[in-house]
Amino acid sequence: MANKILSIYIGTDAIRIAEMQTTNKAVVLCNAAEINTPDNSVNDGYLVDVTSISEVIRSSIFGRGFTAKDVIFTVQSKKIASKDIEIPYIKNEKRLQGILQANSNEYFPMSNATDYCFAYAKLEDYTNEEGRKTRVSAVAAPNDLIRCYYELAKELKLNVKCIDYFGNSIIQLLSMQMTEGRMDMVLQIEKDATYVNMMRGKTLVLQRSVPYGKNAVISALMDVKKISEKDAKTLLSNETLLDQHVTADEYAETVQYLVSGIGRVVEYHRSKNAGDALQGIRIFGEGSAIAGIEKILERELGAPVQHFETLSGVQIKGQAALTAEEVLRYLPNIGAVIQPMQLKLDLGRKESSISSDSTFKFLVGVLCVATVAMAGWSGYTYKQFKDREAKKAELEVKIDKIKDIEEIAKVYEEAKLQYEIVDAFDKSTYSDNEYILNLFVDMESVMPKGAYLREFEAVDGEVEMVIVDSWDSVTKNSLADAINQLSSLDYVYDFKADAYSEEYVTLFLSGHDEETGEPLYVLNDDEDEPPVTELDRYEHYEAGMEFEDDYEERFGGCVLETFVKSSYKVSFHLGNPTTGEEETEDTEVSEEVVSEGEVEE
Image (cartoon, rainbow, N blue to C red; front, side, top):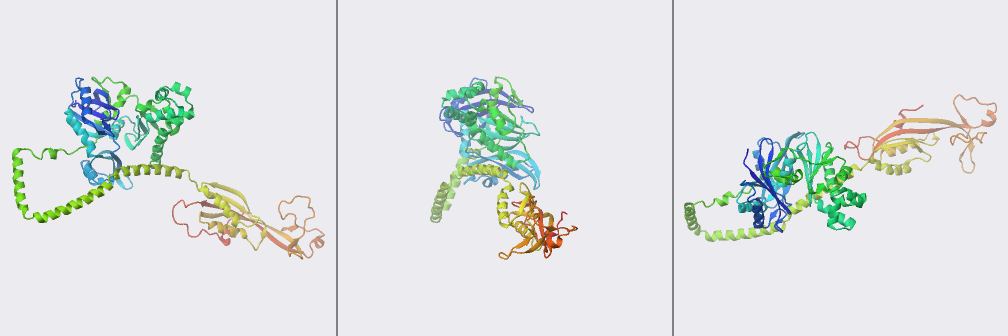
């Protein structure tokens, strides 16, 4: 079995120490200890008081069976920038570190890349239409942050094996727990934050943090119910008490920030990976014990929720007498020994710069010779020195002005995420049927008097309708003109005249009104019957009809005048063209084209 190694995670509230061994089949937890972090000794991952931290760690492991001399630290800090990066496939993984280092300014906007150390974890190789790709999770950590942990190791007389990023430690262990062929979300709900991991089988798809955890829920319940912190914790730890004293609306208000924060990450994932439907939710961490949290997550996110009961691939032996629930608190420690990121500082150069007295004397001699050789150029070099000092001061001023660029970049990334979530939600609510009001307004302005809609159907902008004109003279087709105008509207596309029909009637014109000049037609005798149409109350002629004996008396001297009623069935699309291409060449429908359409007899 491999040598033992210490895995240490230092949080704001607690320090967790685990002594581990790894085998081909499992990770073995041999010993463990959890202690309170000294007050004001840790600030956002930085070890402010290394001495006090080393003392409490030393006292917790001394005489308690811990024997390992190598250590892995897991670091969590807002100062560490992380990003998923896609690059062309690289067969030799040893080249990845150099490529990421060389392109660090492209991945992480920072003023001086030499102030950071970079590391990566390979997520997956895949192939798309652009070719074979590699997706990696890259991080950039400030050198002064990582240096704190080297100083702590020196105080503890331990050898730093490597330093891992908190997010990578969690993912390495979670990947051992997941099932291939599923899309699951894993939530680590801690006191002050919740970590959201979208897992496609054993592969991390998306990792985000939400700035709300158990403490935010406790504070919200205190505000909603106007109770003490102790009472709020009691209610949130007992579902029966919670149901008795907190209504469903009050509970929803209590957890709204936590649930909505998680929901925004889920919506962002859906917008980027439409084919990956969420199948399940796994939760752990201190906040996973909040009463009722499983039900509301399942209701709001639409997937079944379950707790981690045991950890696959992890064995508990020796002096690590931990319960299954206690083991879950050591996830960062356990995951760090599987495949950690290599956040390292190159300290060897400084430590080996003067290795012996002879080397020192040799360097002094070289320095003396160089000093004599440069004496003649002192005037010239002095001027150069002053110029460079001035340039250096100028650059330092510029650097000072943009030293907050890293924080700005993080704010930008968060704002961009929020925008993409809102934009995706906005697009999902859009329908081309929103143009129907414009269509009706424009139809009122172009339709001839008396024309009406007999049928109308609109589904997401796909419109079918039948327009019927009033009776008109055969020499005039005002409806065809109106349809041509509709087809030319800037939001109408793919306009088609699917069918066209006509009805004809011939009336007996007896003369014209002497005052108005309007035509006078012979009325039907039977005016008691309500007319079916506006023309039925007039005497009209139909082909093949037989005239009565009084024809000459009733219609002598009348002129036959023919009228037509037109009907068009048209279809078109409202909004933007579905193909995104230019509008087709000729959407105008002329009277001649319409009249040549299908005629319904």
